[in-house]
Structures are given as structure tokens and as C-alpha cells.
Image 1 (cartoon, rainbow, N blue to C red):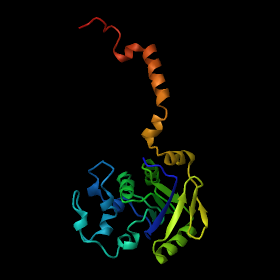
Image 2 (tube, one colour; image 1 turned 180 degrees about the vertical axis):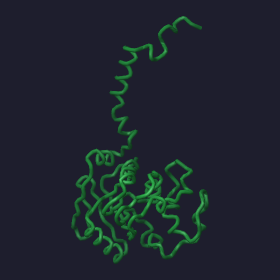
Image 3 (cartoon, one colour; image 1 turned 180 degrees about the horizontal axis):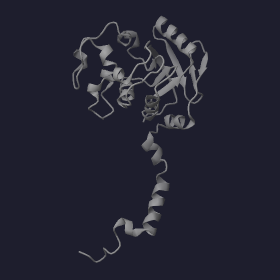
Image 4 (cartoon, rainbow, N blue to C red; image 1 turned 90 degrees about the vertical axis):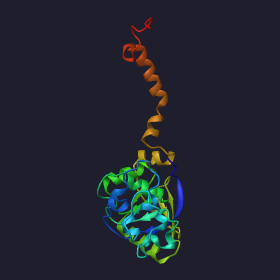
Length: 220
């Protein structure tokens, strides 16, 4: 998993509340579990004028000109700005996979659905919670200014605005440790690999019968 320390990125404003995971990545794209390749189908039902199907060449599909993220000014955005309860609906982990595959590294919203919020951290995506008044200000700035970008400093837990103002955010210490070090759940477990090997060695010594060795010597 990619480490997250400090990044500067263009902000894409998705001015909708209660965006659910089926809107983030529709159900027909859930057949794959590769974690990659979902970016072209992010917000598929809003992004295109036709209905998308798996393995379809998205580059040949008609874009919806009224969908904000189709505007060229947000083509390279890596920070998604949203409203309340982002990521509600089903627990599909494909939702953060699609966001990451589309180039987003961080989200900013007043609130998130709990399961989606947890899944973001497992996939290197930072979901930042800010007060609604601060989110309102960011929407105004992102819509008014082409290329509006913010700097996210995870070490200091700040979103720094172009004028130098810093907005502080809270994050659980363990989740912060995982993001800063690029660790998913498997990576966290492997941090204890020496202790795990020592335990298994001692267990083999004390309970060899569990490993199918006792009484097997000399048999052919």
C-alpha cells in the first residue's frame, strides 16, 4: 500500500449528500476482485450517458457534460470534496478501490458511512472529516478557482489552503500509523513476523504431534 505523508492536489467538488456505494461503483462492476481497473467506472451512472458494462472500453462511451467531474479542470484532481454521509449503502470495498484507481488520495466531507470510512484506510485512502462550515468554504473556493489545490499534511493532521490557513482534523493513531507507513492489515501482521516465527518454533517444540511428525520416522 502506498505511504501517505504529505500531498498537494487539485480539489474536485462533488456537491451531493448521501452518495452511496452503488453510485460510487455500480453493482455490475463487482465481479472482479483485482482492486484495479475500476477507475473508468467511478460514478459510472452519473459520468456517462449510456449504461456501462464490465470490460467495456470506457473511452468510447458518451460522457455526461453536466457531471462536474467530467469538466477538464478536475481531470487531475486527487482530493474529492463531498457532503454528509458519503459512502453510505452497501459495504462493498470496490468503492474505495474505484476512487484510488481514479487517482484520488484523500476525501474531505463532514461525515462518512462507517463501513466505507473503515474501508478507505485499508486501501490507502485518507477520509478527512471537517466541520460543515469549512467544507462549505472549500466548495466555494473549488468552484470559483480553476486548479484550486490544497496540501494535506497527515503528520501534522492539517489541510493547508493556498492562503496559508491550516484546517486541523482528527484521526485515530493506529490508522495514522498504517497510512504513514503504507500498511494494510496484512502489512501490520507482518510487522510481527519475528514474534510469529518464534511462537511457531516453540509450539513445534512443545507440541510436535500437532505437526504430524510423531510416529512417522522409519515408515515408507
